Amino acid sequence: MVGGGTFHLRAGEWTDDTSMMLAFGDALKRRGYDPVALMDAMLAWTDKGEYSHNGRCFDIGSGTRHTMAKYRLTGKPMLGKDEGGNACLMRVPAFVLYWDRDRTRAVDFSCSQARLTHGNREALEATRTLANILWELVDCGESATLDEHPAGTWKREEIDSGGFAPRTLEAAIWAVRQTDTFRDAVLLAANLGRGRGLRGGGCRRHRRRQVRCA
Image (cartoon, rainbow, N blue to C red; front, side):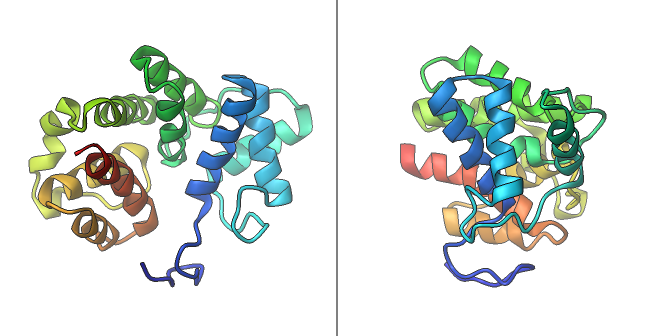
């Protein structure tokens, strides 16, 4: 493990993706699925730096930032508009692990949390796909959803390295399917280009589940 990157982090430090997952995981542990508790936990991160390794929120996606600005004013969770960024994907592991014995709830609540900040239909479908993949990997160490996804057989030039949620998921799936080890999968995903931390994070979630359940 090495540091560096856009924010010059040290080895072992994490970005906003992990902070959001930790915030939602903590809220789930305390209150179950409660949109107010989830948004309050996010607010504790954005405004107070909780769940961050350095006590501050130093990066946040535009869709999440806009949603939190509205929540800060109203105190009421609202459905995200047509935002398609991949932050909705990064929070999914918390819900899969919380409902690791109930696939339906794990998937449904993964999608429900996504709607709090991201309302784009394709982003929500990507969230559902990721939740199914992770739940299958946690359950038995294998995922038919992952193995059957067409992105796994695409050529490198067909992979889009942007931050749109479906593209991030496709890139992570592609990296996992092209490699045999956790290290190689993460390295391949991270080297795809733009938003490398996003794809690397998604890839780590896929490959780590396979490593742990093997």
